[in-house]
Length: 310
Image (cartoon, rainbow, N blue to C red; front, side, top):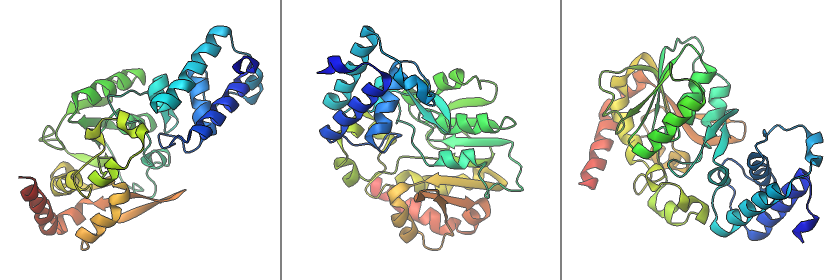
């Protein structure tokens, strides 16, 4: 049957049809089978995602056909994310290496980076920025690419994630402006202050993790889960961030579906929830002065959480 497939478009259509029939989950960079199949086919052929439509009629060699078909079968049989199969993905318009050492880049924070963090940074000067819980390094590296005057630290507790992040630093040629630091939240960043701290930390609850589709099993659990309500790391970050922010510093954190639990736990804290093009995505913005003003209730919540973990 597959002998009838010849062109790039043929294989994209075939892959999308197979993915739909197999009932795959699309949550790693793409939300539909056509985009997923396009990523797989073009990346496996070493072609850019914005390939002009005229090239869709290009015919594959026998070797290329066999490689693409094998990847399609692995996507279905092993439920591996496409980014891991082809070793690359795109974030904020930039290509990054991607494998099992870190989560597949997919944060809505990409939209904030592309828009210059407007209106949140309007009128503010940023010299140093931090990407906390960096994983593959995509957020911090993209911040540096879009803002050449910034010095950016990217931090993670995972040695494997940091090894991938360092490869991406070299891949994007930002070695002079981005430093990867091993740190358990702020533990390895003593004495460093930032005008902007951005984080996409683990925030999946244990119940949510148990119910995740098979595609997510291939990602490191350390990068996904954070306690029963998904807020263990976020509360620690809120408790410690002020001492690492400059006077007019800004904290931006993604907590996803744990947004409601956080708002209920700390109703006094004036979280500003970002509206993206597709709607709310569980990302808040908070001023350093708000962290200081509500430090007592934040510290109490963080201390209570630590007590439960003992």
